[in-house]
Length: 259
Image 1 (cartoon, one colour):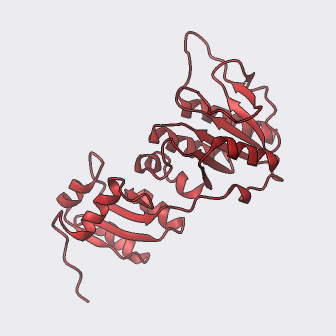
Image 2 (cartoon, rainbow, N blue to C red):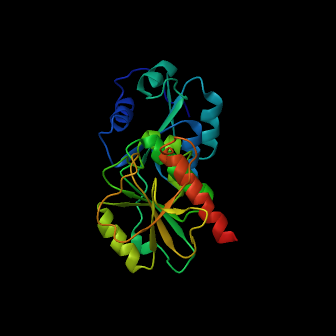
């Protein structure tokens, strides 16, 4: 069977569809740029709506076809014009956004840590938070709507695929989510820049939800009575990057629970 012709026009309907998703005009679809993200999405069971591969990435195209992906070959310059990266990786795929989990799916009987993020505006920070959550063994990531979307392309890249593997819960209201989690037996703890219990001395046992606020450290109202943990800092440093600070807390929680 003859192969399809290489797409060479930016006006091609498939190329225009990719541009629409990359521009954020279809919130139900995610864009995956790069070989690793495409592989992660496939392994996560996402159905790929469209796969565009640069004409000069013949070896990659053949590999993807061997695992059963239908794809379209695109002139490299055309694909580069679509890409939102400074250098196109030569492959771009579209898929339906993963299903956001329901809080009722959480099992509070397990020694589980849920990371809850409210107000983080920078997608790269959200991606890094997801990556640390998965690496530390957290059971999931809860994202309060209004900050960066977990399906933002920059967040997906920053997570190195963690957002496609980790259970993600998206809620409209932090207060309602906190109440529902408390009813399910989760103890709430807030990451605080100052004034909290030393994170190395905190009791991390039991099912708990670690609330992390915006890049400024501010948490939304209505979370109820939360314990607070802080990371002691030397010198004149006021605070750590939200992803760095949260990583320290998550890995300390994992260490303490193994002890």
